[in-house]
Amino acid sequence: MRTPMAKREPPITVRLPEAWLRAIILGGAALGLGAAFAVGPLADWMISLFDSAPGPLRLAAALPLVWAVPVLTLCGGVAGAWVAGTWRKENPVIEVGADSVVVYDATGGCHVERARIAEVFTDGRELVLRDAGGREHIRTRVDSGLAGRLQSAFEQQRYPWHGAIDPHEADYTAWVDNGPGLDERAHTLLRMRQRALADDRNGAADEARDELRTLGISVRDRGKVQQYRKV
Figure (cartoon, rainbow, N blue to C red):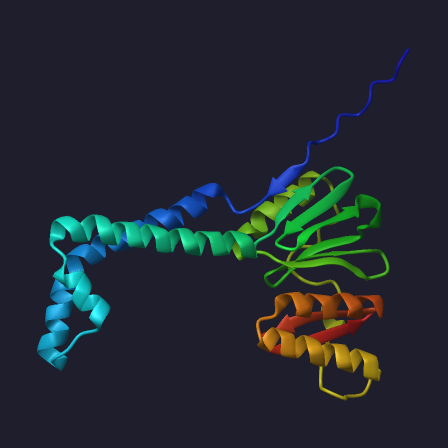
């Protein structure tokens, strides 16, 4: 007689809800519609006050209302679609399965076996997965609005969820260039990462973080300050 296999929970996917993205697009269109009725009075007010108004504002105000409504509504919707698309790109898709976690972002995907995960938590606006030795498998930025969905997904799949506080919070140190406690290679990588972040070169910053991870150093950001922890 066969023993019935235990039923496994299907993978749970956490991503920005499509309803949120559609709301951004519709909100942009609604702002464009409102602007169609406001540009005329706004342009007249600026001209009466400053004897001038920005060229795009004057151009929009010159449109007949029958044209201004569809044109500005469309422009608002396009702007909303751009914002929604950017928001989507900035947030990963996280698949929480019974045996593994897969994180998909703009650079590709990262797969981590459940047996290698000892801590899962959110640290500020980042989701962090660590092993039993304290090394980070994944540290990825997620929208704060997804925190509850992430907690529910990991708890439902019975992962070791640690909430919104890093269990090693007290072990982090603010990085000071050439300060004690790190060798020259670590300082060089932290220096490179700081410059990459200042230049909005997120790929280069992630590469420096990955190399620091191989040296047994975890790094995170608090405002414009890098903080590190030796594992």
